[in-house]
Length: 561
Image (tube, rainbow, N blue to C red; front, side):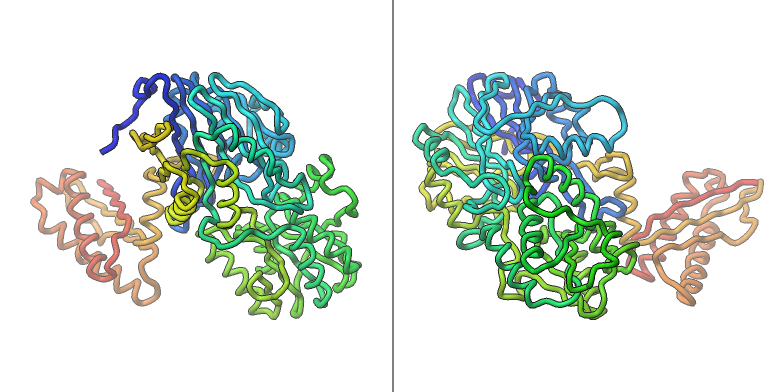
């Protein structure tokens, strides 16, 4: 049984600790912490998608309460790259932390755009860091080390501590031809390995995928070949931060004599930032959706947002026939050039179905021989290669569900890494050679972005909404006179239980049960609202459970004249 770590006094002086408050045993919501001699360092602060049981909620963030209580000991936050699951939580949570943020120019541009959309004039202390530059945060000497991924300027974090060197990989792959940004630098990783790596905190996204990831150049060539045999309009769905993919689509379109239009606000944001930083040099200016009406259908390519089935994204609106400027007709083509994050298969599949039902061709990486997608994450061979370069003494697999963490751990064992520890959110791990283990745990949780408010995913509002999704609701109103007698039959409002004649039957049976329960109560009990309400609630619950085998949300209103 592990110890509950409540504050900094539970940590021993002179020892280095790792703690994940988000992103271990799950995808998204990454929040990682290092502690040495009472001082903390944070790496990444992201969001995740809400599950289907979170009615009315799309996004989640990790609960930072544990580190918030010690924010005076938090030396800084380092962001590994520009993806939402690594920086999307900052705009929502920074005021609870108030530490400096160390970040590359590309990721900083997106962070500032996020912050501009939030109310309030107070802005974080954002410090732009170049890869290779050493900066000191308390006892931690830190350096960003460039690595390829599906967004530019992605970095691993090298953290030098009095105990030893830690490499926090962030998200990565080994792409020799990334189209935008620099290729990976094998010599840097080998040098760290020669100098000695105490621990590697490593992402696990594709740790069960054999081989190696493909290059963005492969995608560009594959899309060029595919577009050459397609007629009519083409829509390509991508992740908006994947500038390499945007460039691959644009180059393929240009090779086939097609213009390119961007459809979706986040793509236009990426376009502005990408052109400012030179990542789209040499590409023609993109068209807006309003500009394409005069262009022949065989001469246009749309790049669209919505790869995860987001209901308000461009491709969802086009599929539903609700986009004000873009339509796709029978014979047009929709190419999905993005990975579906686990948990989003249903909304994405719904979009596929809508297009196919209306005669549009849906193209995925599994339906054509051409390469139209490359993962931003390493396969087994790449992970093996990185571990052989770094040669860490300790491997901590994070960023992935348990089965992917286990696969990552198995790779590490085959690479003869002596200490492998698989964390859950809240696991406190002491990083020491030969004796690495989970030594305690802290309380963790998630916060739901409910409208503009952040609430616990276990809050009453979320819990009741979830219960109504599953069991419906019943509102019963009873009107009593001064002698505690019913003036009229109970008034009922039923939601989510039945319709038509069945609803009338339900109402009749529930009313009868209420009246029977009321009559059974002693006269003295009818004068007490709490006793009366509980008796009626039990009668309703039993009746609905008998009819529908459901447990609805029940509200009782007692009106006394």
